[in-house]
Length: 369
Image 1: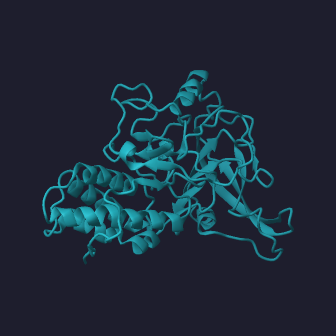
Image 2: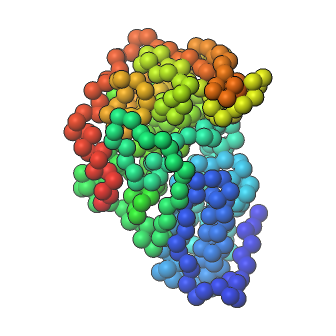
Image 3: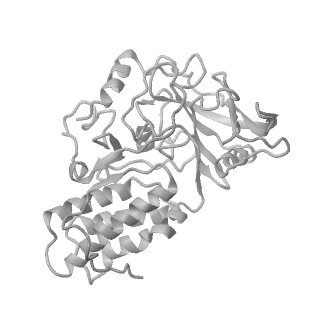
């Protein structure tokens, strides 16, 4: 299948307007990818049939692939943006002659997304905290303020492209707590040149109890959690892989450390006394009751338990989803509340992490490089 390469619009400016807005919602995400597909990818593809790309086009293509690499793929996104055809054109279509490293980048992305079945059966939380791992606003207090409506970050492509930190940087360099994560302007993204571990696994997935991260995107890099935004990641049939205890529904949930009472998505919004709202992400917890597969619990600084981390997030071990009950919220609407119990025969929760030194390092993350 082909990606049509239309000629540039006659009224288009001579140079691409290279300021875009990082989206928070699916519709905006589709608009961003389609915009970049038309104004960056398709124009570059057309140029490769005539000769070499200009430096500006190369720079914009780097940005385009940085955006693609940061996506949480889904079949809906694939269908709406023709991502599979884009990657096929960049990697294997003999009519176009993309210079290195773009064919390899496209091939690696396609292989990764195909191995994930284009996100067909993976489920992520569809409502979570503001995108603190996308915006450079580092939480450091014990309690967070009430969440404000998410806003968008403006990122200029020319300043974002291929701007990687020095390998010796203490935070973002090799061995640093943010290694493999790019921080340009006020946005974070995963570096596509640094391998990251898949979170699509049950159990500890190689993690040690007490491991901690300044931002959720770092937990995604290490395979602790499957999504950069949202509290639940899992499989529709096999159950939840991981769960972030964030205190988002503090009026409904209770975090007692070894026992967690966790409410499903949109529980506080429902006003139907006869039927709870159950999202796809919440249903993975119900599947976990059936399969008895343990769930990785990552506790945020904003949770309610006295032993919560002083900043960032911390891996506190494996929990079993024991049961679920129906309850009523303040509006009189039903919601589902799940009870999780920490699995036996694990090392104790390491409540003194992050250490004061680590908290100071977490503070330095927002300074960038």
